[in-house]
Amino acid sequence: MLAGCAPAGFPREASFAELPGWGADRHAEAIPALRRSCAAIARMPAERSLGGDGATARTADSLKPACTALQNLPPGDAAARAFLEAHFRPVALGEGTLTGYFEPELRGSPTRRPRYATPLLARPPELVEADLGTHIPDLRGRRIAGVVRDGRLLPFHDRAAIEGGALAGRGLELAWVDDPADAFFLQIQGSGRVRFADGRVLRLGYAGWNGFPYVAVGRFLVEQGALTRETVSMQSIRGWMREAGPEAAAALMARNPSYVFFRALDLPPDQGPVGTLGVPLTPMRSVAVDRTKVPLGLPLWIAGRDPVTDTPLRRLTVAQDTGGAIRGLARADLFTGWGEEAAERAGRMRDPAAMWVLLPR
Image (cartoon, rainbow, N blue to C red):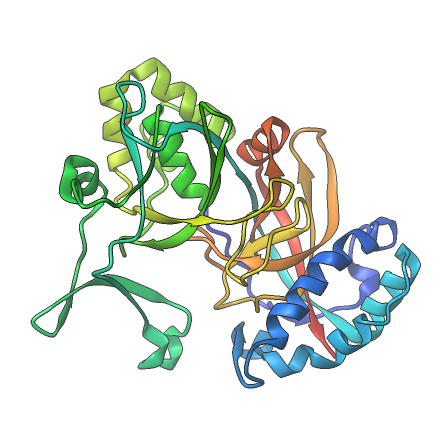
């Protein structure tokens, strides 16, 4: 995945008339996601930062008037649109990159078996994370992770070490799956479902990472000439892995030293995974953003392309998640849902898109 960088002159004040397709969206479909944001933010201290930087920075109390008005919002798209225009103002973020992510479902077993030999791990108790912004304000929202030894924060194991058995035998295995590539892409998605042979489904959510930066293996394949910028996607990377064989696939995955740990979630099957904001994600209405640039919880208008239908994708979304590969002002990752269609859309979505954050008035 490629990071998005906004051109010079952004963010800047805008008007709703500038938003492509603003009048045609079904605004009411995004209101449940916004209500979930309000519920999460209501539990925060008033001065808690939602994220953002400079002109886009906001705290929890800034959203309170809009959330209060939202409680009495009548149904319908017209009412939803009028509410948004009355309580928010659009700020243009420029044109960047829109990608997609989904909640995959893997085949697995609660215990190791010959077919199921790749573990999905819980977060080790000695792994600690720290927000660099605690000491350096300019680095607010940037996190590091490692292990403390002799009073010093040292690097944790990288992917190669972990997959080589550095954490084996400690009871951290939440489940075992039958495909290392599935486990790899599950870590990129950050959440998923594991279906056992007896029909039970284990829901997994993000619990932390080993502190190493995310490295896009697709970019490496493009640099090597194995794929092109136009064809690189989750599907094409998987195809390359199948053709190259297990050893080459393992070597490719090892190029990404970042490793994600999970936790078991108690969620109903018809509900999306929980994002960084602490609320279930809504298919095609929740997005992951760089919270150092865009506040969590706020509406975000995106104008891009749907890779499945090859039609304009112009819709209201809500910033409710973050991701290791999501860096930059005009950069968003759209949660497409779960199932085959969601996987297809997310895997092929990597296009230029214009974005506007709706800041509370």
